[in-house]
Structure formats: C-alpha cells, structure tokens
Length: 619
Image (cartoon, rainbow, N blue to C red):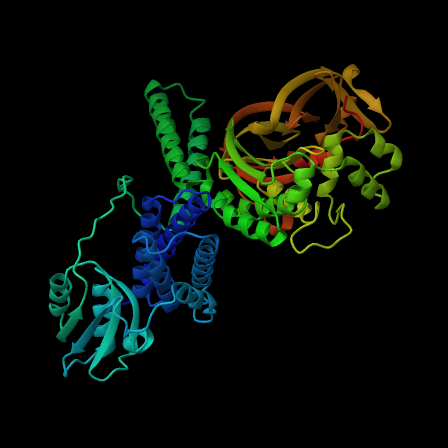
C-alpha cells in the first residue's frame, strides 16, 4: 500500500493528538489529576501509536507504546503522579513532536536517540517474564506462513486492542522482521477474559495456536463525560485554496471593470443584473476568505511548551495565559506571525520575568505570568504579549542609545517613553552587556518589527518599571483583499488602506506650519508632521505652492502624520498583488492593485512615513 498519499493526514492528526496530550499534561501539572485526564492522554497516545505503526514510523510507535504502559499503570492506580513522572512524560511528548517535525521536513525519525524510551521502561522497572505478576501469551504461527513478520505484527496489533503489551520475546523489532523460529511470546497486562482474547487471535489468518494465561477479573470502564460531535469537513490542499483565491481576486477586478463600463448607460435591467453580480461576488469573496482563515490558536499552542522548557532552564517559575485563541486570521499571516512572537516571548522569559528570589523581595508572587492575547480591532487584529516582570528601564535604554550615537543627549531627555521604547527596535540594539543564549532586550526586535511591517502591521511597546511590559502587534486579518481609499497624484492613482486612515481634510495654505525645513499642521491638539506626496515620489509639480490642499491623516497607534495629495477619488475593495523584484527597494510602496480600467495603482506603505516623522513635534 502506498503510504505517501496518507502522509498529510498523518501529520495533521499527529499534531492534534500531541497537542491534546500536552494540554492534558499541563492540567496534570496544575493539579488536575482526575481519571478522565489520564484516559484522554491514553486515547491520544494509543491513536498516535496506531497511525505511526501503519505508516512505518517505528520510533514513534515504540515511544507511544512506552507512554501507554505508564498511562495504563496510572489508570489502574498501580502508580501515582509525581514531578519526575510528569517531566518524563513531557519529555516523551516533546520528542514525539520533534519526530513529527522531522517527518514534515522529510528527514525521517531513524536518527533519534532512545534515551527517553529507555527512561520510560526503567520508570516502571518491569519484572522478568518468569514472574507471575502479569500474563504471558505464547503465539505459534502456521508452518506455511509466508509473511511471518507481517502476520506477527498484526497479532500484536489485535492483542493491543484488549491488553497492554509490556514486552515481547524476542524483541518487538525482531518479531516485526520475522526473526523467530516456531513461536513468540508477549507479556501483557489485561483484565479482559481469556476467552475473548483467545477467540480474537485464533480467528486471524496463519495463527496455529494460542497459549494464554491471564487473570480473570472484572474491569470497570471509566467513560469520560466529555464527547465531541464529528463535524462535516473535507481536507483541501492549500495550493488549491490559493488558486481559488486568485480566481476570486480576478473576479473582483472584472466586477469593478464592469461597474465602470456600464456607468454611461441607463438601463434598469442591466443595473439590477450588475448589482446582483456585485452581491454574489461579495458573498463568494467572503466565503473564500473564511476558508483561508484559521484560529490564531494554531500559532499560540506552540508557546506553552516553549515557555515551560525555557523557564526550567533559567530556574524561573512562569505560567502562560492564553486568551482570544479563537480569533481568526488568514493562514498566511498565522504562519508568518509565529517567529516574531517567539522573539518577544523569549525576551519576556529571559529579561522580563524575574527569578523567584527577586520576585519575593519585590513582594510579587513567585510564579510570573506571560499573557498572550488576541482580539479584533475593526478589520484588524491586535495581539499583545504581556508580562508582570521588571519592566523596561528607561534610563538604561537612553544611556545605551546615547553611547551608540543613535540619539543625542539633548534629544533623548525630551523623548516620550513610547519613543524611547521604540529604540529597542533599532538593529543591534541591546541594553545588556551579557550575551544570552535566549535573547537580549532588543536583540532580534528589529527583525520582529520588519516582519510585522511586511505583513502590513505595526508594533508598539508600553512598560512600567517593576510592573511589567506589553508588546502590541496590530496586523490585518487578511492580506489578499483590503478596503482602500484611492487618491490622485497628477495622472497616477495610489491606494491607502482604510484601516490606516484616521481622517481626511481640506486645508488652507496658511494652516501649514514651517519647522526648519519640515512642515507640520495642527491636528487633535497635536502638531503632526506633514508630507507632500509629490516630493516623496519626486514629481516635478510643486504642491506646496497651492492655496488649498487635500490631506490624508494616517495613524499608527497614538501617532499621526499628514499626507498632501492632489485629490480623493473613492473607496473600494482592492486585490493586493506583491511587488516584483525590481520594486522591492521602494520602501514607500507595499504592493500594487489592478483597477477596473486596467490601470495599476500602487499601495502606499504608511509605516515608512512614520519612520520619517519629525522628532519632537508631538504634544
């Protein structure tokens, strides 16, 4: 049987079962040790073992088998939970996750170490086969059996449906290879009746004899009160979904063209038909966008294991709080947001949360908290990474910035806290002189900002000394189709995402302030920088000589900049197309779109304007 066709299903379901095991182990670690929790972990481990065995991944099969043995002891109350056992099971789940990751990369799992498997076996300290504590099954196959290994493996699978296999003789690997002469022995632990197991095994092909000695006792089945209703779903390849999205994007462009083409005509039936087409394409567009949306939980769930491991490495106590995991984003954004979040969380672990002794001295709980949250903010998503650690030391940041000649002493003393914290995103900036294996406050944060801005997002920082830090990420929910305002500059048209526009104005020339060689205007009791679009793109016309000006006010958090344009056109949904390699260096443009008349409009990157904003004009 060709297994490659089932590889994607195996990977997806394996990740789900591993996450389920990890979630329930976290509950155990947090003192939730009901029987139902053990059964949920056992169920996932058993299912994963069966899938791995079918696919031929022996390391995963053996490791989950070892987990099953321990879980079975826990279910039968022969052993109890302990910190060492919890750590060992976390270790096993993490190694299983690494194995699946290697499969995803096409590296296989054969090279994995076996220390964890050995530790699982040693933890139970199983007695030899000669003891009477467990039961022995002696299986004899028919003399003419052609595929001894395959047949023996199927017998093992069948027995595992009714019992826990402790060990085998010869070894599990030798049995699978058919390296035995007349029979093989399986050491089991079960409370099922002899007749049931014997009957099931004897009904299998090529089984000649089954000698079974097993305890006869009743077993109380513990049924979890939790249940899930299977949803009606179908797996779709991401490539197919991308093709469908591209087709819908082209349909949206053609819809806009048709709307413009019929404007000169006055035909009631034609108008009704186009309006109906508009509604249909809108509905289709939303359905396809929703198909691409996935909960941010898929990115969030990787962080509790990471925090737990790093906290233990650093000798810290940290709990993770996740909220808003159901918040949905485009799959592409979820895939790309993971690495920036890793940078920020590692910074919080390494330099945010204090050691228990220091927290005790500061009157805090010994266990620190990192809260990762997501929520909707209009058409955008706000992600926050909040810790209750020591906060950012403004003086340290300012001193380092001055020493690196990033800002002058005079300028630094007049900067707002939020502007000081933005210095952390300067390439190579760090307030620590020690090199850490994990992070440094500022090390990698320029990568974070660049990655977020590449997604059309923004980053900001707030902090209170001794109380903690909050990193905020504001990103669009989808990258493919956005609502934008079209603006005019001479014969050219530009698009500005509506989500970045605070307001539009029509001002007199006299309202423009002149600060040195820069321009500014009053807006909402602030003085904000003013830019002329013709100067940014080097048009010949002098906009600043006009008596009246059209102005777009762009916002980024609590900051604003003003942009002078030739005029406003209208709002519409636009399909975002990436720039070619020839335009990658044009930082003021983030993409392009095709308009209804076939013309190309460039999409302005408002983040670049904020980098050019006049320092010290706020307030």
